[in-house]
View 1 (cartoon, rainbow, N blue to C red):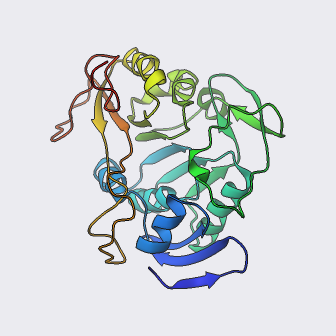
View 2 (cartoon, rainbow, N blue to C red):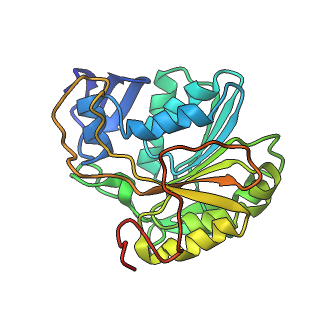
View 3 (spheres, rainbow, N blue to C red):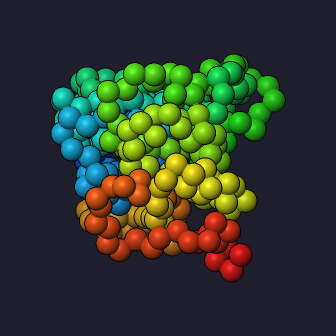
Length: 275
């Protein structure tokens, strides 16, 4: 476990991790625990992003959580690049911004918003961040009461993007809606897509939505634990736990991809391979 640079009496603390200072919630059972123990979270995803992103690139990250990947992406695109980050949970968003501020990051533009298929609002209650929970696993579209949070579409909110290298989406079941609200920028810029797909019941429609834009899709199931983690800690807190994501690129792209299985039948899923 890494020594804490700041260990407040509340639920937040700070460690010096792989990509810089990271603020995290000590009660978060996945992202927070990983940052506290290893100084990183799901580093296999960052390894992939490092291969996709170049200095000067523009990245849109929908569902930034506390910024573990946002911070990495900001370094991959460099000072002439740009990351546009979206996170709807107020307290989680504040943690994201604290991390960016502590590292003097100037190439990230962060927004406390949800992203979907149509402009509107979502009610979002105040969660108990002082109690143990999986705060990155909250599906924000399931609540009937709470403080309204704006919902935007990427096509409307980002009408004049000069370029787009990577669109990363991790929104706990709302991925298809994000894609449908971003058809114009996807068709215009043909970015790499990195999309969470761990809801078996929603997978076929998500796959269809992306394929309708002329994309090939490949499964990527990175483990949460990285044996070569920043802290050099050999204990695996997340034995057998992986994320289920898809990497997509437009069929016109000149890409050589090794080691990832292509998504086949829309009804098949790694969590339900017999379907």
